[in-house]
Image (tube, rainbow, N blue to C red; front, side, top):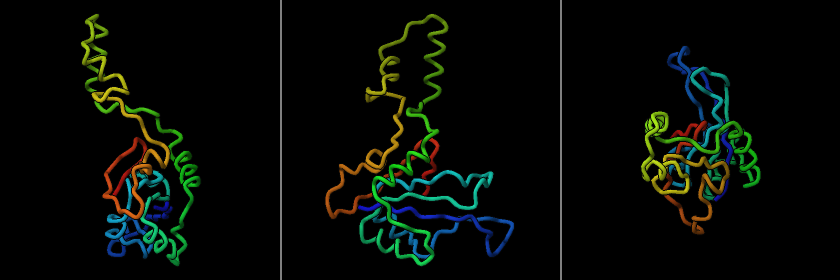
Length: 174
């Protein structure tokens, strides 16, 4: 498996220039990508509804042959990077992302209400607040290539079905 950074641009639609759309490099075959990738598409997050940027990078973990094919794109918008470079990119992109996120804010509000009213918490309330408990409503945000792409679980020469994941502050598309 190799890491590839793909630059995606935001350009006017050829049918209606007032509408802008994401453009991927010509060699980006989404069907091939979907069948050979490991983990999510991790977008830089700069192209928002507010159109803060005209381009952003996308990090993928792909089977070697697909990564090399993509990196040969003549536009120069795709490049293979080392795991260390991918980790550095993630550190920059996820710098403002919290280490943990609450997955059930309504449950937290209920627990806060109980505490404010002086009502004792049940064992279940305590369990859901423990990030190490399987029942937890607090998810740890993965910020490394190992954590996001679960590299230690990859068997050599095996294409693994991808999972759809969305990390806080990072848009997972595709």
